[in-house]
Image (cartoon, rainbow, N blue to C red; front, top):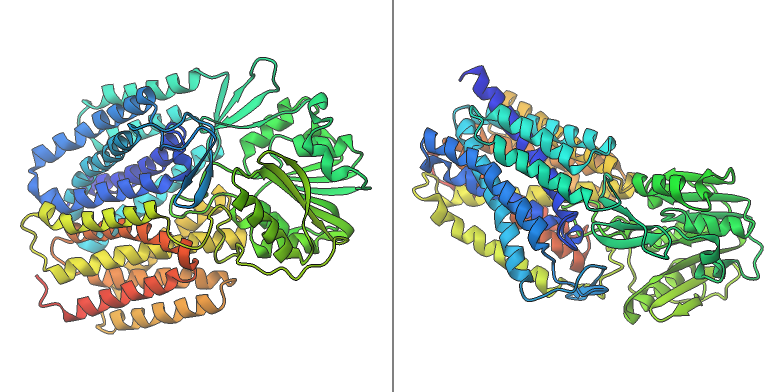
Length: 635
């Protein structure tokens, strides 16, 4: 195979992963409330890629290239549709509940067209990835399977590194799309795509030019505005998020409540935002403030623009990091620990249902905060809780974590503040509250919301229809099912690894990127192992090691090495199964399709907790290994 074709396969792997990350971030900043559901974009990408790999044999070389060249036109149409139609996921204008899970919002109320708009952009994402992946599959099929898989994964690693670099530099969406355009043109032998790619970049520039100031942080689209007669406002993904209070705004506000009748010298603020909590602490004479904010752009806007300049005061130390990670290394003691307005509008990873702040609101996190208090110290939580059940759940969580009675500190309609401290009356309250294994503060109770159950059913139905798309596939059903199960299990395994590492090291974008790179690097190592070790015992031995390492991880979840060991052994199973297959590209498509089912099964964590997902992983790999052994001769 010519070296240029190998290079093209590598570039297409990079292109696909880069586009996946771009669309997850770009669409979350363009479709109201999509920041809560980035997994929809991820699953659309997997569906498209799986379909492209499964049906690639239907197209001759010329047709395949024409389909590939049409991808930018579909992408341009998708961006234009999102910009002009302004689709919404259907929440109300203030808050939304989906099957018992509460979401904070500030966009327009949903309407009857929302479902149709959802279908339009979801299918648009599927189509873009299908058009790109059918060409990738054609190149994949010309190589031996492990070489092709290595090139594809190697390109994906570079795609993550490239997007991580652009995130670190805080480049805007137009710059991401420019880089994508250059890569696309390198993969194409023609220049027919230049026009829609240029249009795509112009749409992104137009979108950002219509606001006073727009910055793309590594987490979200951040917009600065100045409403008439109001303090400067920061919006996130088109939703009003926070304001920068002036001194007259602070006086008499809820920010003063924790200081009334208290002598407070040291404060820890988790979710410090643009600086209002820190400014209130300084106004009340606090001598030392540790302010923790995860978003570097919001923190910088606070440093530069807050009227009281709290982050420029020598008494304040600003920490741009994850709040839970800071709690682990904080020394204290603090007279006051404030869990501020931490209602983030994004997930920390598109593979999970966790928001950036979920691990701040668990029994273990608040228990750790309580241990950092001085002898007279207090923990304070406040927010617009929207629903009575959420406020009650926060109160119960605070009591269960501290063993102290929670006091209602402030109440104005749905805005409430709670305080519990070392001097508060003891309580023996014990309730089913969020824990590190089930960290769902905004979910009313354990269970899979109905809408998620429908999504799981839809994806299962889609998997059942895929054989019709595959046409005259030469693979027997058992083999296809085995690869589908491995895709399902691996997506869950990858999700568990990212979640576990976020708990161990913090839910920052840097850690998520590093974990993703580590997982892909383990895939490359597994490919090498399967290429070198040709023994028939490799498959059963790898399965045994998956079981053993997964069980060890369940028993010792805080050991980082045990988070990654199952990933390596599981990929040896996949690589050993793939290496001698004919038409490995279409089997890889079934594996990608299985990943969409894995994304849906992740919802089970909302009912049973994330440790239970390990049992699903083991069940899927057990089924896959049995199918690989029981199937007939290889074709």
